[in-house]
Length: 82
Image (tube, rainbow, N blue to C red; front, side, top):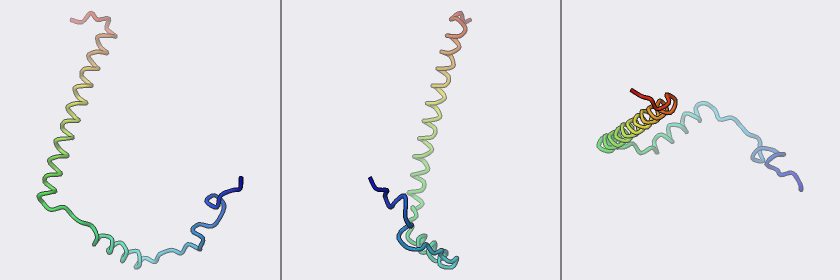
């Protein structure tokens, strides 16, 4: 089976040329103009949704940690708790 060009060969078939700093800056500004920023109402909604999710996950992990901790204590203490 012959070797593929992806492994042996030139990158992209042509010489790679670096972009100048001013051209890079213009491209960055052009891309940032394409960004659609959320409205304040959307931002507040997203913030509330994220906070509710984070609080829910913190509660879930805390309860699981507490439960597994008590279970491990019971197992390793021989079940003779106070």
